[in-house]
Image (cartoon, rainbow, N blue to C red; front, side, top):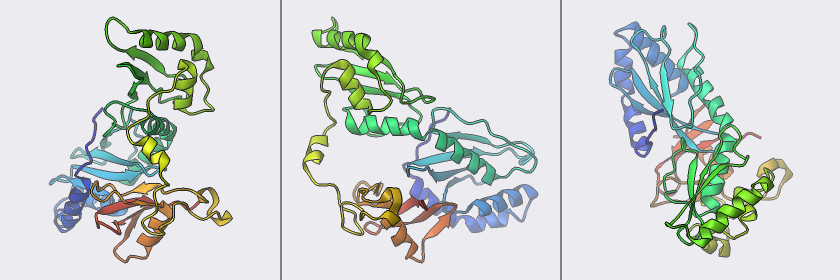
Amino acid sequence: MMKMNASSGNNLSQECIGGRARCEELAKSSSFYRIVYTEIEEIGWEPLRRLGGDLTYFSFHILDKKGRAHILEIQLDRDYPKSPPSVSADVPYMFTLEWSASSRLKDVMHQFQKHLDNLQEFWSVLDDIDKSLCVVDVKQPSRASSVRRIHAGNDCIILVHIDFNDPKSLPECRFIGPLPPAMHMNNLHTSWRRNSKKWSKEISFRENLECILGTELPKPPGLQEEDDHQQVECGICYAQFLPTDEELGARSGTPTDYTCENISCNKSFHSLCLTDWLRSITTTRQSFDVLFGNCPYCSDPVAVKINNK
């Protein structure tokens, strides 16, 4: 399975959009180019991130239900659409593409979106681990990886493997530490074997680990400081939380849930506020249920999923 690097996606997107005229010219030269150009038009140019010169390769930026960004790569044969496209993405496993003579690129997008929906709980568990525990090499975790290495103190590492089919179930677990094994690691291993049956799907991953191991695990750097400070304010409404209002449904009273990907900006927003702000800007574009525009502070591209619930 191929893994994707979306770090330069924003600039490439502008390049792809700028090459639209060139693609339109190619569409006049053969039925293959005409079909591909028409189907990209059908999807929209805003989510396009990379585009091969011969239109046989491109990638799309897609947001899942939780606003996580994903890059879907698509490779076409010259006899497309007779032959189905090849697809790859940074996911733990790829879906089986359903393809027929009447299928189009938008069908690939829809099937990939459904695949992302099936993986939401898996990624939520991993996100919970990354935010609540001291994880080794967590700065740029791969969305395809189901493994996390967790600091357990005294030079001990807990290697956990999350089942993407049942992510809240008891994970596979190994304990790694100095040789010969120190007492701390032996105690953790013994507690795991003795208490692993206590694992519960009703509580968080951290709570489960600490309950089974009988010890408090190290927190990630900065988490304690964050606990001691107030919730980050929204860069648009300047409030920590959305109002408590029945009309907001599940979003009533929720904290900021979107952060600009520009590290030098890193401004936080309520996705609802950002959606309303983007809709007020004439340059904002929409593709399916995603709005594409620019950050109110640094002007870097942003993409936010519209939540109509």
